[in-house]
Image 1 (cartoon, rainbow, N blue to C red):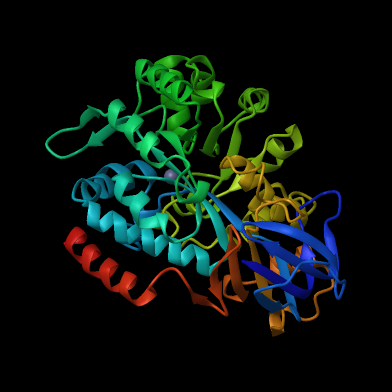
Image 2 (cartoon, rainbow, N blue to C red; image 1 turned 90 degrees about the vertical axis):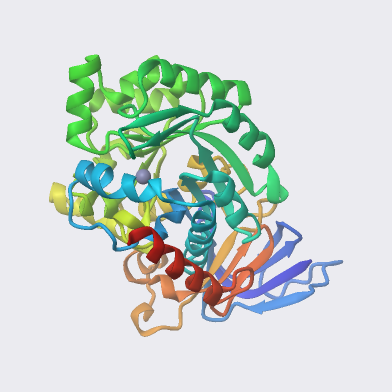
Length: 435
Ligand SMILES: [Zn+2]
């Protein structure tokens, strides 16, 4: 399939040429074939579809680099609580009752919500991952799915099950599926749920499979304090010691970090995922993102799950990420609109393992992009495009979403997901889970 997007402005996320005005974008199958001045004749390119780019802006799709997709089932079910109480007393008991069916529909709803808010790639870490994979495989979104080699059950006393073999099978079944849009990582929930031998075994499993690890790191002050009491080290130090950082790592949160942690993150090339809404909502604190950026750490953004957010809207995360650093440090120059834009796009792609082919709009890259409708009162006049996207735009301005050259949403209508059906199923499953 060949698509021609005509006469459009582009924020490319490519430092070599960040803004291209009034261009035509040619897409052949899954890739961007060309970006040329509008009206240029490109010999041999006969489009099957033309999209008018008038009053639109093209940009790389947002990357939600840390979420728990099927937590949509628990939206607004346990709020205004501190993390440990929220997780151990509210969330874990509900999760014990989760079924494959519930996760399948919850994941699909998450995908629908994310496509509608301009997200083209996600890193999903959750339970019942086989059902999650089935739920997301045909939605067209790009996804890094992580599965844990240990299962935790809180019912009848806290139990841990070893599922390393299931993990291998899940990797072999799903890694590279959906024309390569699915990537499988190993989930290591955190250094507080995994003991040292399990951390070492998990890092060895990731090395054996040639893949990466998705982990929660230093989300709360309590996590830092207990880690020093137990191990005499920060969780970041433990990861370096146990081989976790020897593979590509998506490190979620990194709120309570110090200079030594930042040095280690940089040294091992760990991607840090900042989740501003979730951290604020759970009262966890605010990650010193500007320090990580200054040190050259790859910082991406995530929503975390809907049980701690309570939506999957990356425009909100990008907006907040740019604002809270300024407010806390009383320094308006920290985290510019351009930096926040890069965190939500190119940095995110790198973090979730798709950075070689997505995150930047230029010929040869995968056609993962979104079109924003700029013909709105709150976007008038534009003046600066980075500021417009980060400070003024709303998720509902996303008009069209393309992933791998496939149109997943056009004029705000989803093409791969039956929205009504998904909402019906999630309401039904949520009611059963929460009663
Ligand atoms: Zn999380």
